[in-house]
Amino acid sequence: MENPAIMENPRNVLQVACAGEALIDLIAQRDGLYEPCLGGAVFNLTRALARQDIGTLYLNPLSRDRFGRQLAAGLVGDGVQLGQPQPVTQITSLAVVALDDSGHPDYAFYRQGVADRAVSAENLIELCQREPALELVCTGALALDPDDAGRYLPWLRAQRDAGRVVVVDANLRPSVMPDMDAYRRNVYAAMQIADVVKVSDEDLEHLATPGGNALAQAHYLREATGARLLVLTQGAQGACLLTHDGQQWQARESQPLKVVDTVGAGDCFLAGFVAALLTRNEGTAGSGALLAPLDDMTGRRLLAHAVASASLCVMRRGCVPPTRLEVQARVEQVPCVFG
Image 1 (cartoon, rainbow, N blue to C red):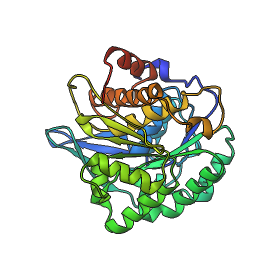
Image 2 (image 1 turned 60 degrees about the vertical axis):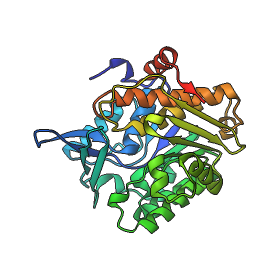
Image 3 (image 1 turned 120 degrees about the vertical axis):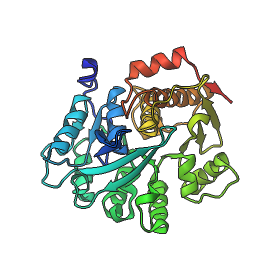
Image 4 (image 1 turned 90 degrees about the horizontal axis):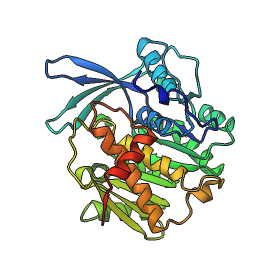
């Protein structure tokens, strides 16, 4: 147990619902053995949100096998509420992860007949209908597999129609998608529903987005999708925030980081951004307040909180999301460079 202070989420009201993969990362070690770690982009995002004191609901079922029980315990231990607390008979998804010399992961996934895919659009919609206070929903990564379009796209449309903010993290996994054209079409279909889109510079390349560089590609994608906000991550070069009314912020760390590995960095970045977005207008209800035009101070605060969240993650082994207090301390002690 890493920190008793995060065992119970202080927010009783559920604000965010997340849907997507929860799996076990089998991370290759130098001795040839594999270390099993709790993972999956949406699982990481869900934990990271709860650790930043956001009332968070995880919608997908988990397996009754040993790994499924560990995933459930990890979520509950961080304060996440399970939308489907009863375990299912399907097995847990697996990912075999190899890290290069810079700590960047390469994945191979095993996801046929697995627990987190044992869900329907109707099931997801019903679970969200039970929580009228939900303000925002998140998905992305492996949930954008075109084979799962029938599960997630109708759910996203229903949440948008219900007035909730829709957040989509592209987080592409092209190595496990046999039909790249179908994959791109489904990713674009999800982003067309989104109010907030998060992409990396690698995602933009995989999507074959027009533009001479990552920033130009990001501008093209924001306009093509109609997203109100788009956040772009560029590794050591930092991140950018673009708005529908033409505003732009760029931020990076002011000093080099001691990177252990980058597993979960993008997930923690997005969690930091969403957490800051949800607290920008506390006491003001509705998605309109969350997506209201940004002033310069707010734009900088959103991006700085997201960058600090990712930086704290990469300085730890595996995905160990930071708490809100840790992120706030880093923002104050190691401020970002903007421009």
